[in-house]
Length: 205
Image (cartoon, rainbow, N blue to C red; front, side, top):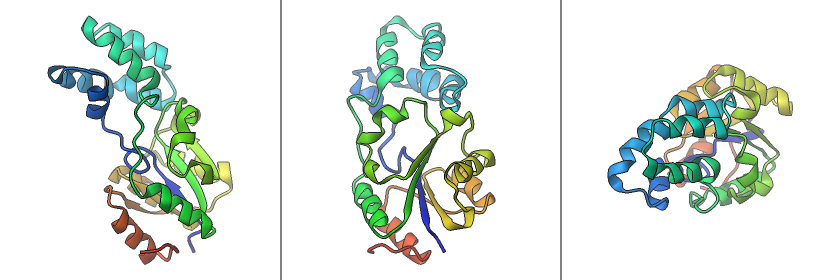
């Protein structure tokens, strides 16, 4: 029996697209590929999520390989992309609220920097979460099986009683390997509700 629902954050509860961040930072379109390659798809970005590199350390590295015109947008992005633009995925806040009202434990498991806790109150349904596990705080990343096991230990959960929702197939597969149930979310809330119902989870269609 499923007793707990575990959510990813980016592209599950909120929209997360690097190109949108570039747009809102007034970065010229011709510079988007540079930022995508040198910042968002960099080893340093992953290291920030793992918690082995601080934002300040990452900025120093980015400065060494980016043109001057991009330094300020990159600084604003690394130290606070969430401060101005945080876009909820419609319907997900309502789903979290409903699942909590139906008696499920609600948890977050996210690959994110330690800054996540500073903006988490703005995430849809944040007030209903029973616990958060942030990758940078445990120095692990999805889909490593150790991060799912860290979640179970941190909150006293049984893997077979948990259902995981993530937009990345490898992350869902990692959860399945540890005994958790799960599904890939493709920004289709009605489809997600149908999947939850098929798995015996109480929610409206």
